[in-house]
Image 1 (cartoon, rainbow, N blue to C red):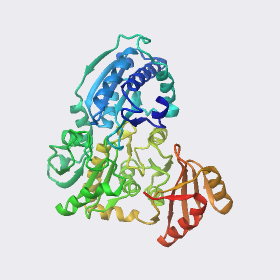
Image 2: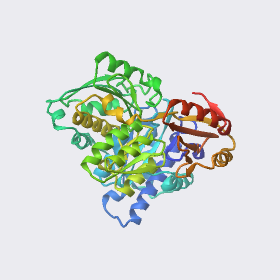
Image 3: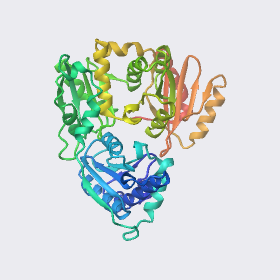
Image 4: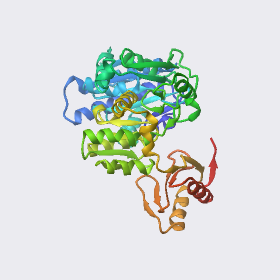
Length: 464
């Protein structure tokens, strides 16, 4: 069954079939062995070299899956530190605070309630994906059986909220902390881990007047799908902002590593536009720095970063690649269309809490509404991501090359093409017969015309 639940970036599946406690035990064994072997290979012999952090989200199946996971880890000889019910970025903090060999969060992020899974991090909160350890963990886990490990592992429970809170709050402006400046904010926790994180981290900040929506995560069920990228899931946030005349709103995903921002008019702010705006503050504080952005982003991100004196760096889609690019370039900040925002001061990881603090800080510094801050970055017209069913994905990309010989092409992630008056990226799904199109132009008519022109090549359009 492990074959079905190991994905490119994490482990995920419907509970209890194909993901159950037996799988969790085997994955715990494989993960602990992989992480401890990696620490040993680096020459570590300290206590942290055999320490693995385990956290979990609020799903009904999370306690039993986390329990089995920890048992498997202890069979491999690990010392397990259980940090309780936390948001995923909390585990990135914990693995660094404890100098641990790695961490595992039991979560299925934005998936429906019947799903669950595991997100694995190595020492320093480095991501573990298919090519950076998940395949090795899967191979170990497939052969794991009770009694085959050294045993002798141990477990302790730690409450690290005070340190986590202090780490995040240092990024808020002084006037927000002392209450000399106040912002009215609507936050939809999507019945996920932001319902725990926001009160514990931001709950008593004097300058934040928070209106809480869907903060109850005690049942493991969701009022709406915990995916803020789906516009229908933003309805409560948008209504709340408009009704209260709030400064802005935020909707978090299930494990609170992603968020979507809504401006003071109740209008969603594209995550690439948000990247463009927030990058200006990072460049001002770090002249000449690199800014990493998802290659599907609007061209205005690249242009505005360069105009501000920064170095725009395109990144492949996916948190593993974005985190790696931040580390390679030393960039202080990066953003992805999916709502993941990455920070050097968060160990080059993504964090919903840190992104929220960044928006607060940038808004206070700007001294004007969010919509006015974003307007300069709305320079082009976008198609949004459109999926096409296609059984011959590579054939379609080859056809595009032949049809548009004048275009400039590059292949960092799928096929990117620049035809002068319009430009696009077409990516192949790793798991489905799908091509994903993102197209942009200087006017809406060109976008519509080019999407229509490309459709016969790309396949059957999938309507959501």
